[in-house]
Image 1 (cartoon, rainbow over the protein chains, first blue to last red):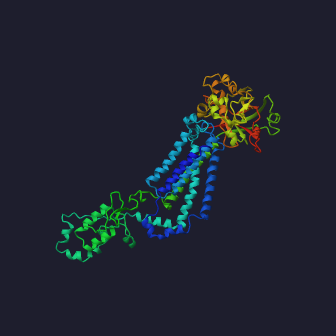
Image 2: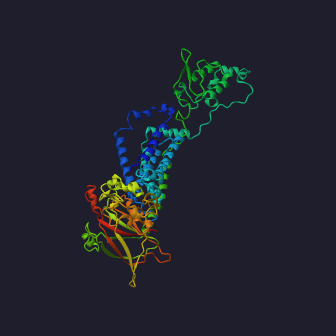
Image 3: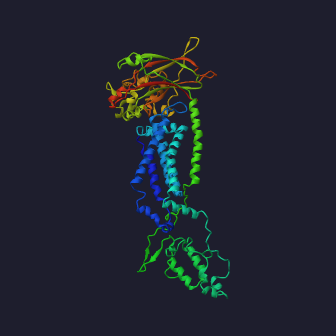
Length: 297
Length: 334
């Protein structure tokens, strides 16, 4: 087949775009769980055993991707009696099965589905079908006769339901063992990645209480407030500092560990910091102000 | 107001740090946007028991009825097969198979009686099938000229190199060239119904509507246009070596003559596997309630021709390429 490179290019565009937008465990969790770096150090995911299992999986997929279309085409005709078991239709069927299996496998391996991922995956599938139908169209045949001899193949074979059933069946047969295997491994032998992801999910699911500063609607500024009678002692006694973080504007919304207080954080931008420091302007002691200044630098 | 060590961020998010000479050094940190910090809102599929197990069960529940439906449907399709290879001494076509030789110009005919136990309703499709005929061999598949078959006058006179050694004969270009065309199946099959009251009714077989529409109207065109005089257009070309008649005498019907002959088109659509079948004729259903093929005795008359598989040895040095079986099939769809 001279046109095998077109579906390969659709695949390649997908393969190159996927890693660009892969997300992983974020920086906070990575620092909190340094064991996440161990598998890399120990070459757990890229060694001979991993390669051998990859080879086995490839062999299995190749056998499925040939023999399922073979069995489907062996003694078949279209529903109007005409030919479908010809060389070109068989090639198109096998090629489409392969592409769908590859796309599904990539979807399985994509752990973070952002808008960009969606665009590339669905776009690649659409591009494959668009290019296939274009290559097998009348126009291309008239212009480049000997290069595009598959004219009419896509139209005549992809309108048969048994072709789509074959595609669906072969992709299921290739993907379901992978899904089952991964699921069982996550349940019985979870890796550090799986455990951290599980914890991340558990943390995200109960929605955290919004930790925003509720600006008290007061016409008096904080400065004046602090100079009212009776508050001087409160301000200078540093009890202010002992208040629970929930009631105070927090520069570090996700304080789980004391490590982070010394690290530069980029979770709040300039405007938000300005607002916070303004609100603290009047009522804070000099000590607190200085502390804020150091941490924001 | 603020401590002097605080440095304001620029509009574009880069933090500028004042250097020793007062010049601003641009920090190389990427912007703090969701896109660049890989914090795009994303959906994470997780394989939990709550998703995987129901998914498996649902897939099973979907496919079991599909399987049952397919099994029941395929059991309802009526199919009848006759093997007329003639490899057995008791077979009617044994003489034809044994005695036929390359240079023989006479036709060899054999008749095979058979019986249908069930009537066949609706349209009945007749197929011929071959075993061990490797139409999917690479050199064989390439041995054609699609430009010539599309009616290109230039390619008619100068066939492509892919057709070699079936491109020229007697110093004339072969039309259609190539090994695929040369090995065209040209057995003639006729069906006769032996009425119980003694008369023999010849069953009408429709020879159009057997090829793909795109093949007949796009891929294969006669040179010289639609209403050309084909014998004049093909002047100066030779017929393929193994053909009895030239290409412009394939059928009396001008819509089915020349390159757009549907038997030729069906043959040129090379099969994927060595055991294949190709549509030969259609028996149209009758308008009244009578079955298309009632049950009873029938006779199949075969005008035998040798299958041109053995000459593939000159193109490819394959081992066993002799066609071992010729089948003939009825097939009723729906």
